[in-house]
Image (spheres, one colour):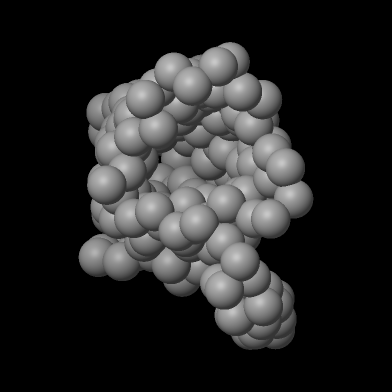
Length: 216
C-alpha cells in the first residue's frame, strides 16, 4: 500500500509540474454528504447504512486538451455504519446495535471530461483513485468480547458525474468503491452452556457521495 501511495504522489507531482504552465488552476472549497454501505464477510453480521459528511480544500486543473482536466482535494471524511448480530438461537451476541465510525483524511484525484452547455454551465464526468488515511481512534470496543479494528489506510476509486454553473459552483454525485477491507470485526462471548470461540470477519465501506464545491 505504501508503494501505491508513493507512486501516485510522484506521478501526480510530475503531471502537475508538466502542465502547470499551460493549465488553468482554480482553488476552492468542497463539502458534502455520504451514505455508507458497509458489507461484512459473514451472514452472522448485519449492517445498516448511515449518513456522514466530508469537507476540505480542492483544486481544479484545466488541461490544454479540450474538455479534459484534473480535480484534487484533501477532505476530512466521517462515515458511520450500524452493526448488529443476526443469527438464530443467539449463538453470538452484541449487547445492542453498535455504530461503527471512521474518520479519515481522503485525497481523491479525479480525471474529468466536461461538455459545455454554452457559457453558463457544463456537464462533467469523472473517475480516479482516492487515498485515505484514517485518523482518530481506530479501535472500538463493541462489548461482550467484541471489537472493531480499523485499518490505518484505505485505497478506493471514485466514479461520478455532475455539472458546473457560472464557472464557480459545481455539484457532483459519485460512488466511492473501497478496494480491500476497511477493518475487521471480532465477535465473541457466545450465549448458552457451550462456549464458542470468537470469530473475525472483514468489513468494506463503500459510499454514495453528493458534493458541492465553490471555486474562486
